[in-house]
Image 1 (cartoon, rainbow, N blue to C red):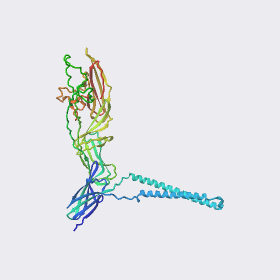
Image 2 (cartoon, rainbow, N blue to C red):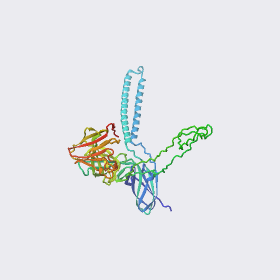
Image 3 (cartoon, rainbow, N blue to C red):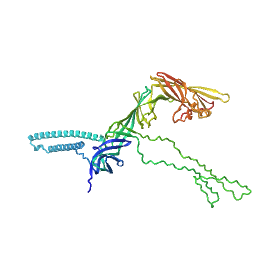
Length: 580
């Protein structure tokens, strides 16, 4: 006896609950929970209402209960064509058409009335009846004219309303039809309520990171507040109402092949015998291609005329030996920091409608410590810049995104945040600080000549800088980047006199004492540019002539700096000054 198959029909939008959404870049993974009753034996569960953005090969089905899943099929269904006869737009179209028909009839009536009046002849109409005829014409003409005016007004109102409805319909989000159906063959051991989870991927969803960074320069601890946000938009065809959301940063990779390292070979051109003149048939002239190169043995020694026989051979130019060019394979240097993979579970439940618009979702709020520094390059620009070196001490990974920066409550700029793992640091520019003023005084120059036979010219340059702090708090870690010229000729010598920073010598390269900053005063330290910085070759410090003043300026006080260096060269040597 054939067992009856129990059929259970469910709608994804009505009979299920979204238990989780994993949102990636460009797509989302939806998890839905269905609870329904099955009978002992075979059951066919038909689930309809899956959106048109559903990816067919992404479906996974998991069940919980005393049942087993035997087969899963996915089918694309054609949604029924909805009639627009009862829609507001169709009603207005019909109304406009009816008004235009009535208006055309009224105009035809007026034309018929005018034609009728033209058929009336005065000699054939009694004068007493003519008056009543004209009165009737005037009355009918006014009535038809008023009717035409009313119809024109009604048509204008209907057309405006139709245009408004069409514009609203154009701007309204398009409701995508649910066009996928899933059939699941479930074999139950007994009649009971089971739970089935289906997971599938939909396209049309995305998220990007966004930040609000607020910096307080008046405090030293927890002086940076970061609001970590996600901008979510989705047009998947189904609305996300009261759903848990997890943001993912990983993305699938397709078609990536492992790298291949080709074999590197070295060879040398072979020597090609040069044809000897006269060795060919009479009239033969050897043709040497332009792109050929030959190795020629040294010419034989000329024989003594006493023993030479025959006529002398004609002289031909001997090509220069081919010099092979040693070409090394090009090497590309780079770094691979790897893709940061992180997941963020949004607290609580959220609502993201199916409208394709941007929706801000708060990820977390962080209070972090930051080292705020001021820096300037007064030789080119006396304005003072600010930046914050922020350490991410949280468990959250910062993914690349835009950030709005606020300093002491004022909006400063919009910047970009790179990928930052926990315990890593990143620099955040904070714009200009107009409360710190730098005066770059005119440069002083003193010339001198020494020597008796070979005269040497020496020029001493003095550059003075004044830094004024108009703030009510002390400024620490203000870095001024300065430079001295670098000699490109051994006859030109440049000495840094003040500050007394020393360049490395062959004897001092074994120790790092020359790298240490020197204290100029209680609030001023001088150091070579890049000292102790990661990624900087410490042995190359000072070779570009750049150094730093690191100063602290009390509130409403100023600090004076002096740069002094000497350039010596032979007196008759003309110098050329240039910058990179």
